[in-house]
Length: 86
Image 1 (cartoon, rainbow, N blue to C red):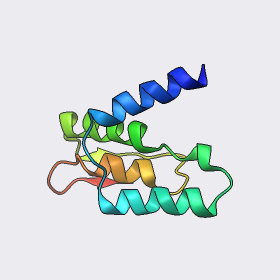
Image 2 (cartoon, rainbow, N blue to C red):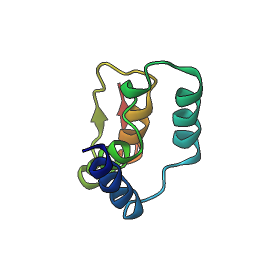
Image 3 (spheres, helix red, strand yellow):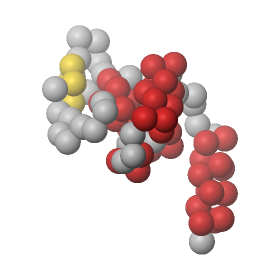
Image 4 (cartoon, rainbow, N blue to C red):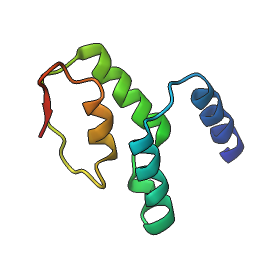
């Protein structure tokens, strides 16, 4: 089952946009220095959050339960001009 998951993840990663330098550095920092790596949204989930945000162009995003801020930064990528994440 894990092999199928890895193949699906690789497929999804090959058809999505790159994450920003800040997001990549935050993700790599988490993987190097934190034991709870699974709590981070991660690359594919982050790209989906960013895509939704870019489609909706919200003025305000309420982010509850942030771990290191990765998903909040993904949402911020699609904010309308002058928008904010709280």
